[in-house]
Image 1 (cartoon, rainbow, N blue to C red):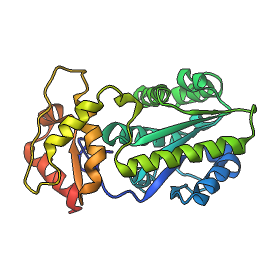
Image 2: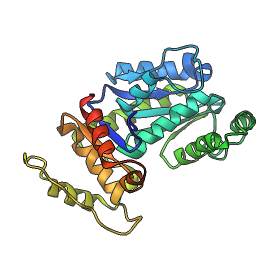
Image 3: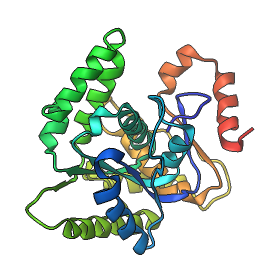
Image 4: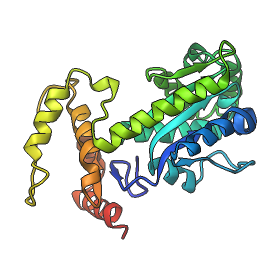
Length: 276
């Protein structure tokens, strides 16, 4: 989650929503998405759904960006024409950024498309990207970010919806899965599949923080690159954030320090936390 002040600053305020729904309105708004939203609501799961029938511009609105950051998890419904919407693709980038910086959970739903189509951008996804490549041939970096986002999402556990079973059965399973994850998040026991094997390290570092104490604690996690230092830090942040009125995460400090002064970083941190 990036703040407007600086890309290295992220934080967490009490979530306003349990779930954020990302979907292609023309594909599923009045069918699968509306049925899923109704089922989530019946289960008392606070869900954000964009009611705008017509979206203008290519970039997502600030209100949607805030809604994503204010949600515990996101359900991304990949339908036939999801990739044809630049709005949806930019929405996905925001969701993945939240996943990267604060452990935001993502549940992919492949609605009558295969994970392979999404990852490799074939079929209607390939057609959509051919259009994007032509439109942004002078700024190909934008299109590459979208391609990378779709490839990365496949690494997450998701649900493939097809004609082999009635849709209500899929919806019931999704709601049950969401309910289970929300309970674990609330208890602080949610463990992302990517964290398996380092649970003991997470518990060890968390115990050193002595969160119940009122004094200041500084913990250094040292080690060679690629052993999971950032992963451990993010997991601990995700577990203890709810115990504080406001929190802030500074990421990629080494590289950011080369571009910005420490005074800027400090001021931006205070601005994020206190809203000044």
